[in-house]
Image (cartoon, rainbow over all chains, first blue to last red; front, top):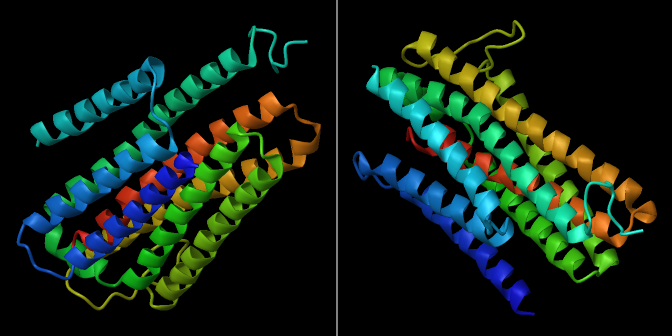
Length: 82
Length: 211
């Protein structure tokens, strides 16, 4: 079953990313550590959303885009105003 | 009888589509709640970086890593439940759901052990417990632990909610039509994966970023 193989690869990929993110915290990359950890978290989130949550179709993507837009406004205006 | 739960839908597929969209809108609103808390943490981290870094080192990285792996595994079993339900393999679907809830319970137990450890070390500034932090800048370290307990307990509450809903779904299973079973597995699955994604961000933010 190719669906099962896809899910298993996704799962193993998530565990590999977890190992990577924990491993990277033991190496001092200067200010780059924070960016790397957040990038890995975002990669994991995208893996989960695409493979496990089947984020397809216009309406679900519209809901995610709307939430993303409001989060950008929330974070953006707060950080600009400081 | 068309097999839909609500009279508003002609076909089970339409009902499932509507359910899925509603779940994504709900997830979007949940993202606002967690987003605001992450923003508070970010601003505090910018202002009190060194105090947060020192306090973060007191958290248990092995237990945090273990819990991340447990939650990722629970998302995998939930995805399996979805796949099995699509193929109408109902008995394995139930087992995948039971495994998901059990892994969620494992997460909560490990989190409980972690809380116990932190409380015994005097790192829990809540419920009037004594806060005995020996490191630098204890005022802002207390703020860090306050945020840590707020964020992780809010996440744990969401997980408890997920486990209760899975249990309810299994209880209603024998009397549910195939279309309703699939619809519910999809909807609960979306919620479960979202709670996993929240932890995927919480873990590096709380445990790793300040190291």
